[in-house]
Length: 342
Image (cartoon, rainbow, N blue to C red; front, side, top):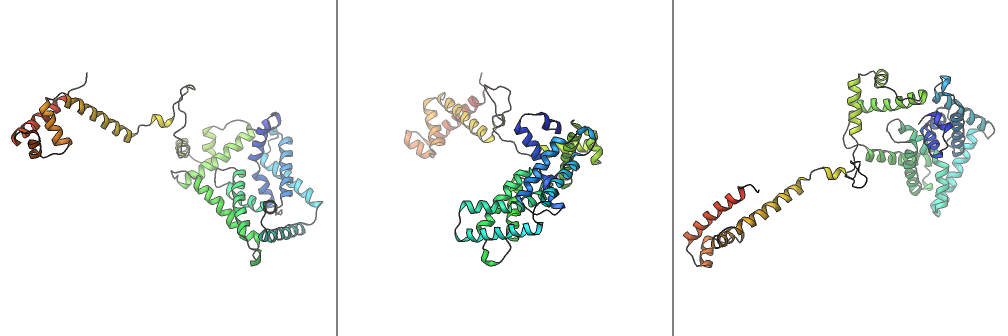
């Protein structure tokens, strides 16, 4: 997705995806320039980002990220100059949040909880911005996970203890994001240096694609990262293959008769069971080819686990006869079983 597409496409979904790609710039500006965590200011920042996307000229040679930061900062400062001083605004939000928390503690309702979440969502955005460069998850996904942690903090907060809600909520938000990233982490662990290079390459590819509208070559990536092409290929292959793939993934081009990955993989347990079933069938067929008395004696000894004496008494023959018949029957079975089936 390129900046040129944002201005030319009529798809609101595509425009939204491009906007989300640059949302971390708003959190970066608000953090670096010490703007208070305020949902209204965040919305002003979003408007500044949209203006930057509409106005930016890729042929100017200016880095879009720098241009967008300046545009967002100007919008925030322009809005804030018309409002109350930041500290007064922040104190009012904190006081309102504390009053709502006391009301929620006495009588919890969904409407109250949603108001508290809206007032404190800046805590979530700040924490999400901290983690955005340490993983491959989108900023919006981290915010959604962080809000779950914020809700848990709201449910457990006791206003009577005199603890600031922000100090109480941040560990819950951070813990929820960390648990989410831990559960999403690949089963195969990559060296940290490889992961760091792969993350740098992701940011580099995005930057080059945004500036030039083209995919960077492997030589360009390696030159920027300071590694050789074989090293880059090894890192890329390892990081791509550390992700798990569902056994239900379709691996055929035939839409009428799709073949899944699971169907292509041999199941050793099923194979062993299948072989055992085949051997049992062949043994039964081989037994049917034996002379009647020999087959009876073999079945008594090996299938019913009779002793030679018990077999001799049951059939009215001597133990020596039983022994001879068993030996003869085993030789015939071995010969039949080892003869290839035509």
